[in-house]
Image 1 (tube, rainbow, N blue to C red):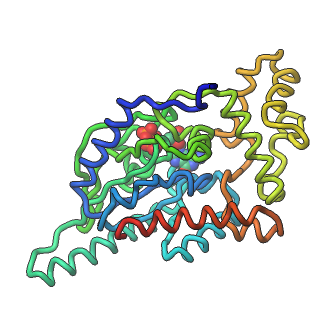
Image 2: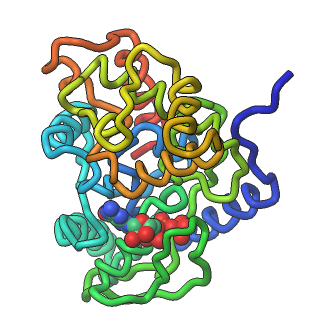
Image 3: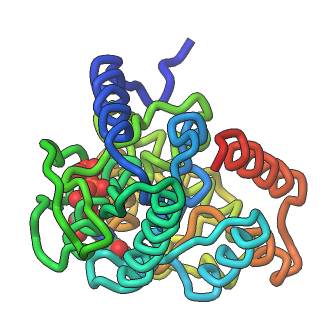
Length: 315
Ligand SMILES: Nc1nc2c(ncn2[C@@H]2O[C@H](COP(=O)(O)OP(=O)(O)OP(=O)(O)O)[C@@H](O)[C@H]2O)c(=O)[nH]1
């Protein structure tokens, strides 16, 4: 039997979960950050259970990495699930003010409840959580309007704990909570790996890059105008009619002296840097429907998965 494409280090996963649970104990509100390119895969299946009754604000970061029309379709899709998605570009501070206002509004609600019970109001305590590398530190720095947390390209750089006051109504833990990236859903895990949101895990670049091309093709068939022709434009090679594995071999032959590993790394890096265009790896049903294509069964499955997860915790 061949090895699975992604392998996690059990010690790292257990440690991430322990420190996340510690952080969650201290807060009233959770700012859950997901990657706008993969808003479904970056929803941890256990999130509802971890959040319990805590209020949460849903942030879809890296909005600059998907087309504006797809953002709008996701917004509508989340609204239909009785949820509100706040899109941000934490690198440039876009959309961050709205996230701050949403967290403070939840704080006002909390203080009303405190007053009703004869207690004094206090600032709401919040923490930013999400998978590795989704932009948590960048978002914290933007919320605080200064740099308190290291934001780096390598996953897994954030540590230690302090409260930082954003306003009279809101305090933030300066260290984000990192969601353990171990997922039983291999397709979702592959998307995390493609987007570099997987943290301390070992994976086979060539299998991940081939899976990326296969996914690209699948999405191109469902929504050609949204995915675009970034692969062909950048490498002079079209993925149509070949498997991801063959595409990678052709790319290696065409550009990298048959070095398939180098081709795989380059392909993944180019995507992660946005050099293949603003390409979403998951699409809301409306985006697919607008192009009159797609796989309705898969969409229904995604909807059901999101719904059951969002409602399993008392949110
Ligand atoms: N294009 C784009 N890049 C972003 C955005 N937000 C963060 N980044 C970049 O993504 C990388 C990771 O950002 P971080 O803020 O360190 O992510 P993190 O979630 O704190 O990462 P860990 O500490 O590894 O869990 C950095 O290179 C950021 O500059 C965004 O909205 N758009």
